Length: 368
Image (cartoon, rainbow, N blue to C red; front, side):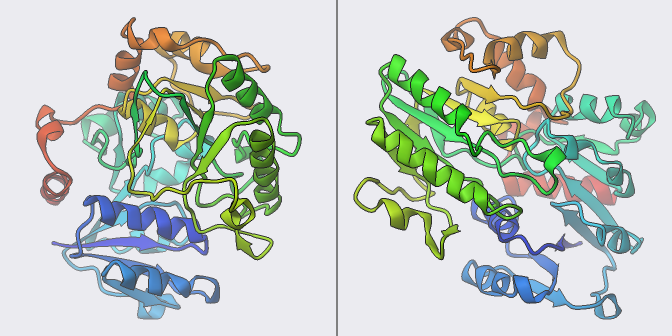
């Protein structure tokens, strides 16, 4: 069976996320990317060539490639996905890239695909409670739990001996109702984070910037710039993950040459705890069993109903500038319980399989 990934977007960060799957080995070079070519995304060609990824481009559906005996993966929902799914000679699989409790995780368009990949039981419950899928869909195998296969790989490990904190804010979203980022004009959440660090004698802040930050609203890059300046003025060492983001025509790091240490995306950084938003980073950090505070905003979310999660978020949620001590999560076992709920496998053999073997299993499963 031929394997394809279909993508229809102009967002630069989307290609960054796509390439990460190839770099980690989830997708191999025999999986060809099909993407709709626009004037705004022609730079994607160079990005794909750089990593020796095969691709097919098209400008209108009259020259769309044939899909006989193939599997098509979808990483992002787009209206044009409906047109591609109409090719019934192929199997169509939606990948919930980076499992999260954001509202877009439960959009009704998910019903159009033959199969939907989720990270674990939380993903199943989220989609059942939304009414998008039913128990019949579960029994028919439409939802497939594949654990940490598609959630992304956090480049961090837990260490109790470091004074480093991770801050991984999400982007501002495509719509204001889907804006879950803790970055803001007033910097309120960031001030709370810096105060927490100073109170606990933590002086090293690692910031992982979402590759889509500023796509909908460029002002969020300026808000981040202001936050970094504030942290440095408060005596905090700030390390920024290198990302291809421009602020006033130059890379963001250009403005901090004398104050920053830059590290490659491939390094694994020891951290004591993390701060993130309602986003995919939460699941990645759970996978690494890193104690994580989660910024909540007044936005609709798709959090599954669970007494376990109720207890968990009472501890880790940052609301009204209140940050609780979550060090006990490592000793009372709740972190492992929550991880097992969010990240589980269709078959226990999966955990010992590499990514390539998991994709082979998945391909055989859907073809049967």
